[in-house]
Picture 1: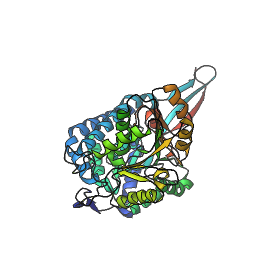
Picture 2: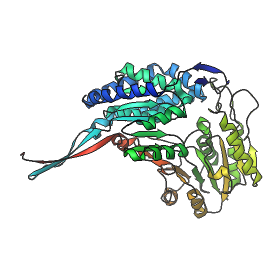
Picture 3: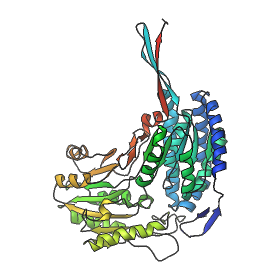
Picture 4: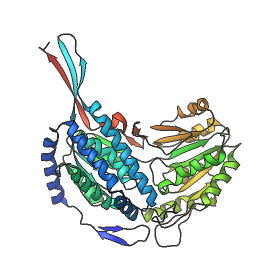
Length: 456
């Protein structure tokens, strides 16, 4: 398997893919290791993860450069991702003991009751390429702390990062027979679905998530899916600073080149401030610096996958054919690398793929609305349910819109944000289950109820 630099289209290196035999051996190793790991005190497992937390900081330069070279995000964003991952790990370090310890429910009377939380066993973590550290630590960190063993499949687009993660976990004290990486593409992923694993945790597209859920349903094991989104942002006419609002929206659209499940993918603006917002947004978008992701002045690097260029172009073409107007960008750049110029389209509507199908790139349509009711109905018009944002000077007014959103996260005067202390979850085509917060700790355990008689 060739590892390609999306900025240069050059081969960084070649990696041998796993096969049926190597995956079988790794699974057998993990099955044995998990039984031993589960007997280790939770405090010890947490201490091991704390060493991993420090190793990420010690090796951040190498890790960030590797991530940028194989995935394409600007170098500073790679450092930002590592910092964000450490913040999440810190949450798990500080809170896992509390939420994994046994809970006495009834201590009076002749029958006492308690809940004990036991690990699932050996789980598959089929991870994503857009934020390999952030989406990875959401799963393998609480899973390991809870006493599980992890078969970790990084995306084929961030394989080197996945191998770095494995090496640092082993260096921190995670036994080799408790965390194993499998490398390869779809065929290797299929092999994991054949194994008698005790849980599947996938981050990626709705199409693949649905396929995995259907394949493993007969096993009757947890299958948690963190999928995509078509996340809306609504700008009310009472916003105080239109320039800042436009800047926030732009960052929500183009950060990580729009390759985020919670990126802003459609914008609705009240008609009274529509022209001012569009002008501010387009002006700021046109000034973005596109180029070498290793250059510190670069704001937009290449897309991670070559095929995404054609996909985005098709969305733009479909919109234009149906009446949309391109104000800025929206085209692939004629240069080496998978570069795509951030695009702004107006005169858009929901007959266009750009406004209804996930883009996963730095393009957005901006639609004019006459009032909150119209904005609310357009925001709800989606099969996805990940996030929704409202910008307004009034929380009470914004809250009325947010309460109607059928999604896992809502934002007032911010967007494209994830917090370790809050559950990260999707509805409808955006997924099943939660990571992060205490719910993301207990996602990797199964409760056992104790009914106890005969003790005082």
